[in-house]
Image 1 (cartoon, helix red, strand yellow):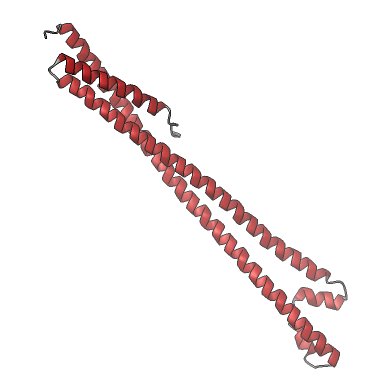
Image 2 (image 1 turned 180 degrees about the vertical axis):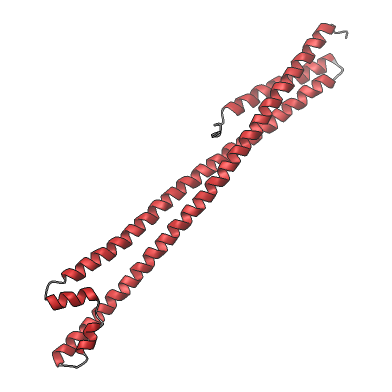
Length: 212
């Protein structure tokens, strides 16, 4: 079938424009994919570091609580031995008294209701709870950072897919230029147009990465 030369030129121009525009969008999609990939890696690293800080803080608090419990148990045991030694006039009473915690010694010497011991207890427990709360807070931050990193990874995958779609558009547009048959040219440029529209829709529906 004889085709008007003007139609062929018009189709060639359309094909060239499609190739040019698609190349630009394909390059942008690849660039955005790389940016999101970098943001994803940075986010995962931050999440791991924050999670490590959270775990370290929690272990420190747990160790402090264990040590505090052992010291409290030791105080109770020595106090019972001291009371018994003092009651029986055992000469080891002074030695046992010296082994009590400083706060308990002050309370016993002042003959109060363990005011210093209570203060020391509240301060120690308060510090432990504060460390645990800090650990919980860091854990929550780490989870948020992990979720953001996962989203960035998904966005990067989306732009990678868009790059593949634009490559398919380039293939069809290129085949349009190479095809000899007019009907085949129309089929290729039609396929390129449809794929271009789908690729653009995919491209614009993915959040763009921060460029700063």
